[in-house]
Length: 200
Image (tube, rainbow, N blue to C red):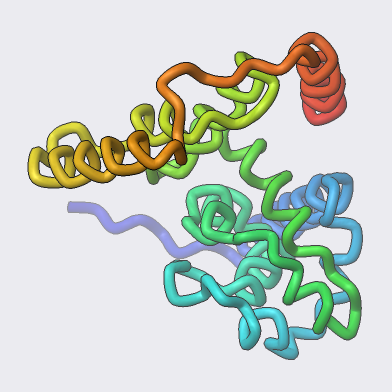
């Protein structure tokens, strides 16, 4: 079997140049996103990752996500669980010496991941259900959200949660009917405007 001839120096330079152009374009795209304006100012000090309360559940730390974006690894970032496990507590931006707004950037990356169909966990289902319920009632109705995202194949979990639901219902902590606010059209108007801005 004939071996592929080695790349010439010119071919290697051209390939590296294309990769660099691609990286720069990705960085420019991210810098246009909400929260991504200062990613080039990150000094990789680790303050964000050191104080992150949900770091244990992430496959990459917030610091690593910023570095990956600067290296042009956008697909890997959008496929990461980190952007979904960020709790937007703002500990990271409070401690960041360069004020890189990772929580806002994580939300922008979530939207981009959904658009490109790169979500590899169930987190998107939670956010989509949350959004739809708020559109429907004008506020959150937790029982419906739970039913939408729960693992219906886990029978023992279903029984345990059914018992919990009955106890909460008896104590008046939850209602069978979702409380619908009068401001539903107003809330939907806000959500439509923010959706339009996010798609631009």
